[in-house]
Amino acid sequence: MLRQNESRAFLGEYLNDPRVRWRHKMREMMAIARIILVAKWLAQMKKQSGVSCTLCKTARAQRGASTENLPEETYGHINSAFCDGMATTVTAAHHFMWKHLYASMQAAQTPASKLRFVTANKEGSMNTLWQKEKFEQLMPQQRITDRDGKGSRN
Image (cartoon, rainbow, N blue to C red; front, side, top):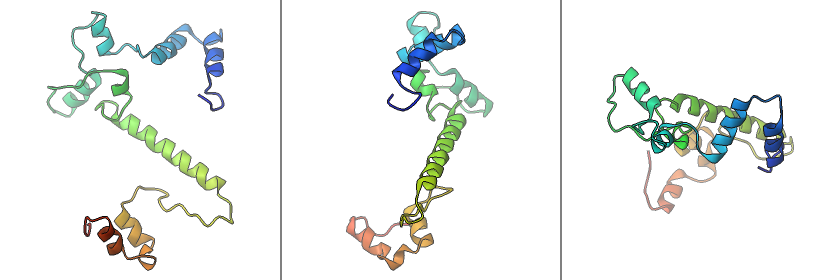
């Protein structure tokens, strides 16, 4: 909470702002207190019988998979890529942030810098990078794989 517009002072200003609707303030306070209205919390309050994730259940039912052994619906679960119903959204948010971070690092790089980012658009395995970037000229890949004791890799 040390970044600009993300400090406790900013949060206090947001919560005290009369232009912000009460339901938005309440949702923010509940997220901070970790008491978002999810199945696990509702079950603790005796307002709901089950704790299984409704988003996972819906996503699995739509693709015809089994709705047995569903994970508990918690605030952490629905905000992770492990929730079947939120996986696409969370993954897209992750990729958006990664591309933004990468673009910021590239923009801050000076022309005199000798560093070059090698994974601009996609993630790559070491084998792919080794072949694409011609690291073989610096050190044979076999020497690296032999050094870690695991032999050659595919």
